[in-house]
Image (cartoon, rainbow, N blue to C red; front, side):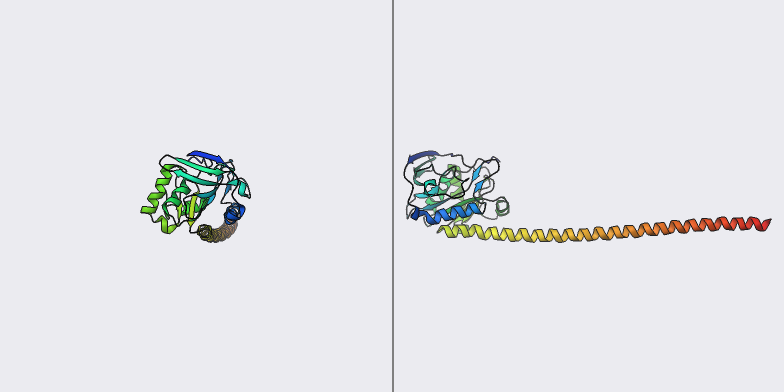
Length: 263
């Protein structure tokens, strides 16, 4: 599986413009920076970035999203967000206006906003453990479908129609390693879905770790018992050898005594 997060795969029509007003994206900026602080948005050791957030603008299909190639930054100001003003999934095209180009996942965000008018916020994160645990337990995209493409947008539609994505409000991207998307009536709901699942995963991991430690402790006790038993066996073997030596000595004495008696 090739991890190529950050590569824009749609035709991006970027109109360079002024940043959006900071007051209008206060929560969006907080949520993005919070996800970064948790390691759910960031950069892999190989330099590939991951994660993005967006919010719908009122009742339109326009939305504000983090800019591409911004995941390495701890905090993002308004100058790192852009407005997606139009998109065409069939033509694999998207228009954005702002200081930066829109995230490479913008077409996927667009598909969700288009298909579910009540959705107001979307968060895309990466987490290997959660990704592996949730795969096929929640709506999961086809492994052959690449991110940020019309195929992924149509796969999103399929998940809404066939796998109750509108109810679950979270999906695993099987063809995009570690990728998970959540959404909701606002960014709080989208974030809480992820955080609750992360806490459950963490609790399971701690239980598993506790079980492993108990098993390790049992193994060490068993090993200690085995060593004690081995030591006892060696002592018993040593006693047996001493007893055998005494018996041989006694046998030698008896033979000598027998010889003397005959003389």
